Structure formats: C-alpha cells, structure tokens
Image (cartoon, rainbow, N blue to C red):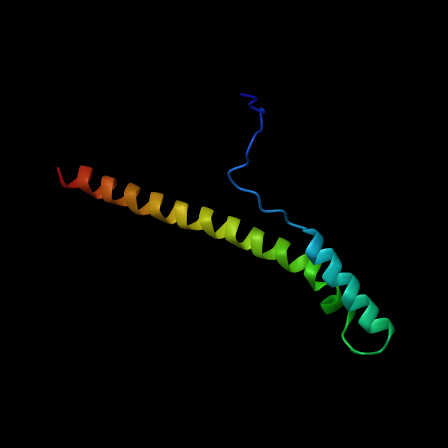
Length: 83
C-alpha cells in the first residue's frame, strides 16, 4: 500500500480567498460599466470585510479569556481573604 505523507490543516481559513478577489473584480467591472454607483470603499469591501471580521473574532476571544481569568482571580482573591 502506498501512503502519501500529507499534512492536513485543522483550521484552513484564508483571509483573502479567490472568491473574494473574483467578487471584487465583478464589482469593479460593474462600476466601470455604470451598473452600480458605489463608493470605492464598498467596491473593495470583499477584500477588507473578511480581515475585519477575523480580527474582531480574534480580539473578542482574547477579551472573553481575560474577563474569565479576571473573574477567577477575583474569586480566588476573595476566597483567600475570607480564610
């Protein structure tokens, strides 16, 4: 039996996927042909929205982690103070 050594990624979330680029190109083409009248910010939104969402999730996970650790610290502090 031939077994190939392949590494599989547990999390495969590309920030800028090919579909985002294709969608951006479609928006640019629609703007050039005057089908839509959007600002450049929204035409390029498929490129920056996934990055903003990923960063927001990453930051919120760390905020939740520090809040939970703070609560655990306060419980431990008041438990030691009570004794």
